[in-house]
Length: 199
Image (tube, rainbow, N blue to C red):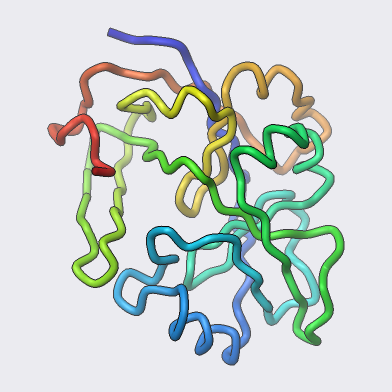
């Protein structure tokens, strides 16, 4: 049975950045899993130095090789300060010269979710760090329902999911690089996997 919709907001193109080699080496010693190439579970806010002077035009981007998302402060502001403080962990972003980028931050979600699909499903738990990785195509949906006390959720490598309450406060016409898609919450997954993949 279909329940209330959420909204998946993502970039309409690929605008990745790259960590400097020194930053990448340090990350492997601390928070970056050497096997699955993503932040280890329970990693908090991240400060990252990139090779570029700043990210490309889209207000949502990411750092390739580690899956950490980047967001422009102007867009972050429109998500609501209270929502951001409660639901996201924000870190600093530095350019190739080591200078902080005032208009950009890194983000990580406090309440993990998986946006699921119905075709070409791949799911595994990293044997090194225990992180859950999921990929699928087909119609997007959530299962189970996200944490009821949160309004913003990070999607691995691919934008944010927000509640209808937050979505209705956004004017995405001012962000032509972003697309939004309504996604339902289903009681039964379509991928033949267990309902809760994160436990």
